[in-house]
Image 1: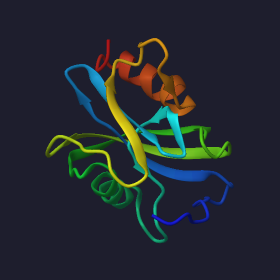
Image 2: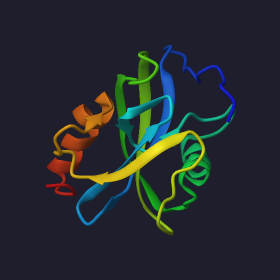
Image 3: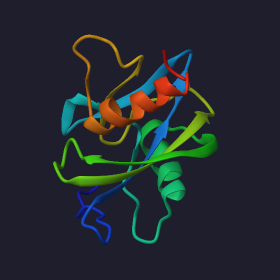
Image 4: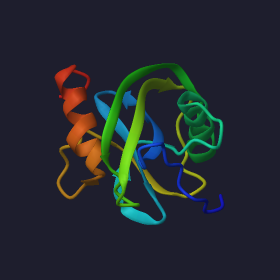
Length: 141
């Protein structure tokens, strides 16, 4: 992937589409080569003219070699982007996936987490918004 200017909306926020993928009470998180110690939800920035769900399908294929099954809108999250340090608008979908994920493209690592492991550094949007939402709904303990 080539580095491109971030996709900003009319409010100057970075636009991102991301997936909540949970198996056996654990959330799939990934880290990028640019910041291998910070874990995010899988997904990415839409290309020009791409809707959030289209971007999510493309990013999950590029990054993990998977197809999202039955994606459903979970939430619109506003936070500071961990890597870019700018305001971010993240459209979060829940989905199952068609096979076991394999990190590729710009990913450094992936793991399944409860979000409570010591030493795991989660992006602010995941830590402050997504995990509480998943715990409230009973998806994660």
